[in-house]
Amino acid sequence: MAWFYEHYRDASATGIHTTGLVHAEKSEFQSIAVHETVGHGRLLTLDDMVMLTELDEFVYHDLLTHVPLCVHPNPRAVLVVGGGDGGSVRETLKHPSVERVVQCEIDERVTRVCQEHIPSVAGALDDPRVELVFADATAYVKQHPDSFDAILVDSTEPIGPAAALFAEPFFRDLSAALRPGGVISSQAESPFYAPEVVRELFTSVRKVFAEVHGYYGVVPTYPGGGWVFCLASDTRRPEQADLDRAKALSSRYYSPALASGAFALPPFIAELVE
Amino acid sequence: MAWFYEHYRDASATGIHTTGLVHAEKSEFQSIAVHETVGHGRLLTLDDMVMLTELDEFVYHDLLTHVPLCVHPNPRAVLVVGGGDGGSVRETLKHPSVERVVQCEIDERVTRVCQEHIPSVAGALDDPRVELVFADATAYVKQHPDSFDAILVDSTEPIGPAAALFAEPFFRDLSAALRPGGVISSQAESPFYAPEVVRELFTSVRKVFAEVHGYYGVVPTYPGGGWVFCLASDTRRPEQADLDRAKALSSRYYSPALASGAFALPPFIAELVE
Image 1 (cartoon, rainbow over the protein chains, first blue to last red):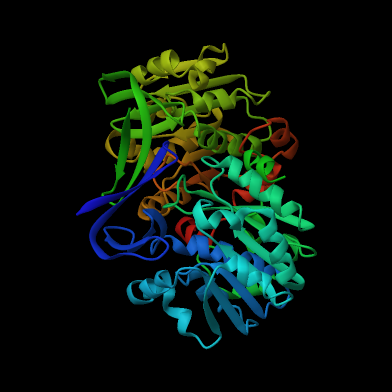
Image 2 (image 1 turned 45 degrees about the vertical axis):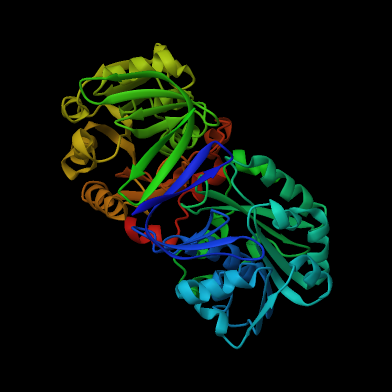
């Protein structure tokens, strides 16, 4: 029995009571660990940062996935950037129109570890509609113009290789990789502890897309809990969410009420994303 | 330099980097401490539980206060139950119709410590409209029927003396202490880590009030961040919020969008409060 602590920016910390180490390794890119816990199911960490717990991953994955996919009228081809744990793919496959999901994760070991040790999250990755690509997503999107109806940027924090996933050139490439009418979503960090990251991300995205909207949710095991997300498109707006599909998803976090409610931002967040 | 950790239900923990102890004492009721921190301003703890930090107390106080007061058409007399730090009083006084605020806190030392060491929160307590009562609120409300337009239950966790503030008899007394058309709000704990507390509170309140509605916000330094609140009344509903007043408050957390958006509950919370 021990506690795992993630210390964030020298100011705050999140602790999770663990009961044992299920798996640990150093991959080519990072250290990967899976812990069993007292109250959070299994915990995945990368370089000692919480990536997910089975208790609350539904919040993050439902918001990153269902918000953009319900705003698109008919998403058929979807790209997940990063997201090696498979949670975003699992949720994407719940949309009946989806014919193909590409998960482009730089570190194959993350996916293999999750498939072995966190099947509740990674279990959908063997669906025949899924294509696993283990490569640098910044290169992959350049090579696949006009290919996707939705792109979900399921990244880690903007340090190391993931920093490029928060910058304007990447969003220009994402725009080119979208089919007409396509949408993107991106996780956008903590408004309390990383407000300048939130602001910079939205500034970058606004240079590329005509419609850029922030939304907000609570992922308890992320620093501060509150987490911003970004929805962007040249044409689609949050108000265009398909509420019948939203209802049919039977999500624990997303619903017709959330389709608009998640965009009702407290003023201190609204000013970061405007 | 040290870290303060609040461990919650043996499952999770919240850590705050502290730089020094400003004040510590044992009162008749509990241990009280104020810390200076790296990134949170000053931190108040009671029995080693985070009560507030200057970084994020605005979320909690704005939601507990402005939601019920904007739903009431003309709040003149307001009772704050607990809330010895003065934050709920500070926000209540921003409503121009308010003529009188009673803060009924069981532990005078909490208020005096905050007045001395956290004036950004407690500084409004010397306003002439404020009446400080240091007494058991369960007794106080019995003695003051038909007296208040709004009652804000700004309690600690439902353990020890605060447990009574989550039970049906207390809400019956609150109902009697309200003037016709009155409203109450109560903090209602974490939907992730204390779902049974959320459910029990709403079950109790529903036995007393005709209109009972849950709302939700993110207080990063509370366990899990996500926090449920309860709005209850015999007659008033969230849709009746005065949006002109909501806008005029210039709150960092509450706004006309939040007046409805805070009630857009994720399904996993909606099922706890229904």
